[in-house]
Amino acid sequence: MLVIAPAQADEPTDAEIDEIFDRGCGDDNGKDRCDDEVQRKMRDLYGWRPAQMEVDNGVQFRRFMMVDGYGRDVLGLSFKRQPGASPSVTVSVPNPKDRRADVPVFPDTPLTAKLSEQQWQRALGITHNFDAQLASELKDDDDEEVICLHGWFTVMEAGDPKLADQQAVKVRSDAEGACKKGLAMLASFELAELAFEVLPECAELEASDFSNRVMLLKWCRHLGGDRVAAVQASKSMEELEDRIYESRKADDIDMLGGFFEYENRSKAERLEALFKDGDVYFDAPYASDSMHAVVLGIVTSKEQLPDEANAENFYDIRLELRNRGRRWTIESYEISDLKTINYDDYEN
Image 1: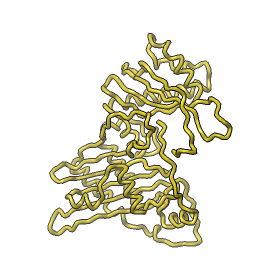
Image 2 (image 1 turned 45 degrees about the vertical axis):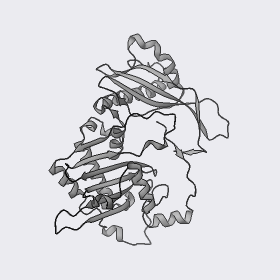
Image 3 (image 1 turned 135 degrees about the vertical axis):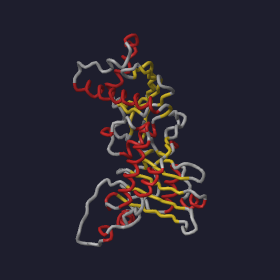
Image 4 (image 1 turned 135 degrees about the horizontal axis):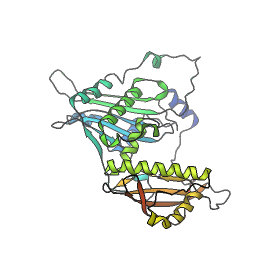
């Protein structure tokens, strides 16, 4: 699904960006991820309270916020033990406030799981020294030039309230880019691996379809409703994307064959023509039950735009899917009127 946000004003100067990177705080866009105000806004994306507020309320936690190699906030992962409750893990994604107003947002489906004592202790062990600096990070060699492109960035926080007379309240944090090859990034991905292991809804997603566990968890969080069913619908959509790509290389391939039941095959013609014209992007499915799901997406259009325009034409699509056992087929669909996005007004 196409997601856009308003363009940012007051961009930092080149000198300011250089200084941010020199401190090891810059994401791919040069945003200072070590800055307190930037981190506050990041926590707001996931609906998180400040670390000190959590420990003041007796919550023990380990959590991180991940930024991908293009400077985009992609995931918040929180391991938490609240007073009077079992430990749990919760996967969060940025709030959909920057989606276009005309795109429907389905009812939210939290992605969380309870942890055993062994799993909780494993999370604590993974994050035991994430805020320590390695000797390689402290080394200052002006003659050594390091080139690192599209590095990911993590902001990790840990809180330990006073659980016994001898234990003081403690809050730790570290903001670290992957280029530093430090402990916070390593701990973040180990926590993501642990989360994947304890979330049964995500287990049937193919790891090879994602660049890493963080992106797999992000996709799993976007799946809606009955996630077990939505995973299966998602797999059928992947098959459909493959078929669209194959049909463009060989015109004799029936693009939508098998994705419509025989009695509905006549409905496929307009959709097939649309898929042949532009690039197709599907959002994660929302399954209302084990038999029905909805998939939203966009199809770009090659219809003529002014030569100077930094814009793109597209159609919104909505697919109604039904579980037929062997795959989820398209029962019906809706196509919007042609729309245009002007990239001079928005940024991805």
